[in-house]
Length: 384
Image (cartoon, rainbow, N blue to C red):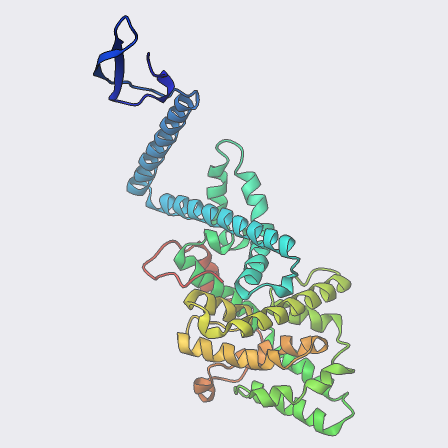
């Protein structure tokens, strides 16, 4: 009698019985048998070929990068920046898909999300709209070389911060901030003109004092900003001209070349989005943000965080949240005007040394030259 072979394993003892002619067992013996089973699968050859191709591509790519780094360091910098930026873009898309899936399964709205998820949706949507044409251009064979040329000559106009070198980030964000600073004084002058249409004397005086205080180089207190909130619930500050709204939109980097009704719609949507972000950030707490997130949050709300320390950024953001948390949806224009009120002369310790706000000037030659800056020794300060 032999045991079935399917259950055998290596070195299994097989036992054979020996019996007499009368059926009685007179003895038995055993011997050791070793069995080897090999599993063959049609996926193993394919897996081996796939691994070989992957390893070959990685080896070729590493040699190519080493050649660029040794012979063409500037080209290597652009190539490395583009590669890392593409990885960040795909990671952002994965995060957005995860957030959208969570919203669909739990029945959540955007305003119900935590701060980091809400900020990820806002930032990725903005970046993808700007990056999509560039990614489509790089799909055909050898088209990436054209993309490299465009990256070199027009990085600020065509690329997002994922594709900027650390030195370019410093130069470009400074250039963007100088563009919106040019709208501070015209906005304050228009507010002073509108204050003359206010019929209530005390509120008119508060708005005039607030505008004059900012123009003299001082940062107003939270109570002074909230003291004029009643003006934004009625005319003239709840019905502003399209020209004024174009200037306010420039503080959020919105295009002023759109028709008036689109400018008003986009400005209202961005103001509501900013208000929702502030609510979520208040629930999280500014102290929970790391350095990159903190500077990004300050920059979005109108402050240039580069010359400031982490404690100054956190102090300013806390002041902003005090104003924002006290406002209603109907007072969102005061929130946008607070970009000028709070950021024009911050930090307050240097208010007395700051010159008064002056008329807008054209960007300097240094701002234009910074667009072609390449990787330098100055470290990155994060993406805004």
